[in-house]
Length: 620
Ligand SMILES: *[C@@H]1O[C@H](CO)[C@@H](O)[C@H](O)[C@H]1NC(C)=O
Ligand SMILES: *[C@@H]1O[C@H](CO)[C@@H](O)[C@H](O)[C@H]1NC(C)=O
Ligand SMILES: *[C@@H]1O[C@H](CO)[C@@H](O)[C@H](O)[C@H]1NC(C)=O
Ligand SMILES: *[C@@H]1O[C@H](CO)[C@@H](O)[C@H](O)[C@H]1NC(C)=O
Ligand SMILES: *[C@@H]1O[C@H](CO)[C@@H](O)[C@H](O)[C@H]1NC(C)=O
Ligand SMILES: *[C@@H]1O[C@H](CO)[C@@H](O)[C@H](O)[C@H]1NC(C)=O
Ligand SMILES: *[C@@H]1O[C@H](CO)[C@@H](O)[C@H](O)[C@H]1NC(C)=O
Image (tube, rainbow, N blue to C red):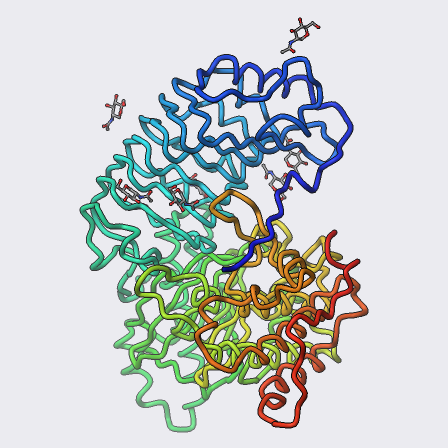
């Protein structure tokens, strides 16, 4: 029922005139001539017009390199010969699915450094998977299902920051599942292998069917590290240059923060309770196992301070912290996040920032601004910590997960669809939060990284914005992740130079995501890459407005008008021309009015297909 208007990457390059690199042409011909196949291909060896005429071949913009090769179901059988596909060094998309290709994973593929989508499902590949997946930094979708791969799942997959889908089902993989704490991972299928052990916590958001047909336990995993009493090691022990493993780092963070908190608590006790004679202090500290002098000098020596925004009223208690337990929440754009649970049940998110682009002073200034924002639609920064080796932020924790996880996370039977009411409240809350952020520093603060994984539900179930103020102080290397690209306004090339209008654009994409239930950049089962904004433009232009909406929303009665209105707001936010986008304060009013308008009876109905977008604005 939903009509998909597909944007094949190849179509964008239609009409290229240059001659494809001779080496690419040779490699393709070599491949066709040396790998037996049952259906013939129209690859005419005399033709130079590789880009426009050869079945399954897609070229780059100037037609000089082959960047896509899709040959599903051609009846290829046997081993992939050397010096063929591996020579197509610009390849980004490779689909050889549904053939009968055998042999090990071709070592030639190591040369395909730009590979982003890899579809090899339904073949006869065997042997182990490549040990080092990190050579393919851009891998986004990997489908190796329905082959005969054996060996174990390489740990290196967890280093693929752009990975969004991984399907290894129906192979003979053995061993444990590594903690693929890949934050952007949206689709995972490891079913029907011979995997053993435990499903790591970070993967339990996926439906049980993703792990079925193995010998796995869902019960408990090693990444929930119970906190031990802090060791007597001084804070600076992490400075002697050793590289710590991620697991060790987690433990270190917890211990370091606990020690730092201890130092803080001592200050707290000394500064706030001195009046009371300080009698309770020494007994408390003895329980903590250290003398006040030591703790104070230690934290002064290290010149490391956990800076709280609420000063002495903060509810952390020394013993609470010592007993806090922590778990990995995931790998975000700017670093790992951990959840620390205090004894009284309070949870906080500790974010470990990597690669700041600014020094301590600017960092502290920025944190000061962010910490000053107290708003129900902005996740509150409780504290931060800066030292040479570690930069941490401590924020409120909201248990229901991000909007991204709610919209795209759970699939299958146990999925709870988001109601229209909830989506409306997410939109209203997020808009208010962003508007509040934009009012900061004399109306100049920019968020820079608005996306559904940075929006949570506050206790009133309204949207609530996280990661405030980070994008402008983090270095660029950390920032561009494939998924984030779907939110980025066309005029923005460097995320540190984001603007308030580009925030408005990203918010528009978030609205589209709420309306369509689709990710900003996603692929269909037929390997096509779809940009949400372009897709919605095309559907709306063709007057199929009704086809845009998430099928999960269609069961609610009488919301069509509200959805169409919200769609129009979204479209005005994602206007290509910067000046045509509304200001965030205007967006708030418009989004709030969606419900108000439909509640007043005298309002004329909108024609369903009315489109706010002039046709010229549709395709770039
Ligand atoms: C290619 O050209 C040569 C001579 O120009 C000709 O003999 C041959 O049949 C052509 N091959 C194809 C596949 O058209
Ligand atoms: C990989 O992609 C980037 C940008 O998309 C391009 O600049 C680079 O030349 C590509 N590498 C190869 C080997 O084509
Ligand atoms: C990956 O993609 C980015 C941009 O999408 C590009 O700049 C880069 O060259 C690509 N290749 C590698 C190996 O990172
Ligand atoms: C994996 O398969 C290959 C060949 O198919 C075989 O030689 C090897 O022993 C197998 N390894 C394991 C661990 O089963
Ligand atoms: C991988 O292939 C299987 C089998 O064709 C298919 O069901 C699944 O949707 C594919 N997964 C991805 C992520 O492309
Ligand atoms: C993953 O990346 C980290 C650093 O980012 C590196 O230390 C580690 O060796 C990598 N792991 C694998 C398996 O490549
Ligand atoms: C795995 O194989 C089973 C049985 O052939 C099939 O029902 C299932 O769909 C396959 N899974 C995937 C992901 O292709």
